[in-house]
Length: 119
Image (cartoon, rainbow, N blue to C red; front, side, top):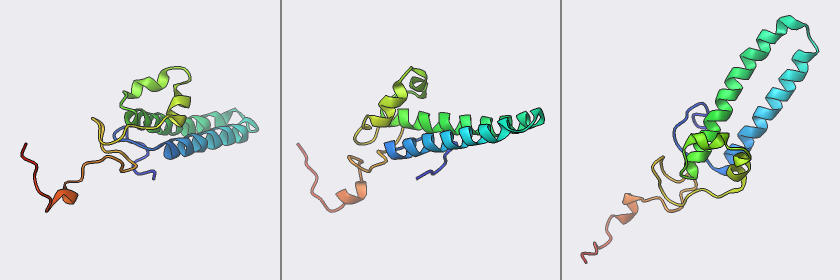
């Protein structure tokens, strides 16, 4: 879990997406509350915290869209985040990679020694 969290490639499960969103909320709200109690010179600190957090959230959202065989741009659709959180991903591999649950992935190593069907 959380392998390459800032990368936009691959697929992730609902659990990782949900935890990513919780981490984002905790850091954003916690950091914002701390900085709100300080003077204006700490607004640069908020920007330094906010930019990587947005990148992290967009990357994780894109990978969750990929798990559902959609482009990462789908995450800008209103309320699509709920669909990503509660909807199951595609079974087996798709154009974005193998299923992170391992269900339906093609394992050639398991086919070694099995007879070939020549129909």
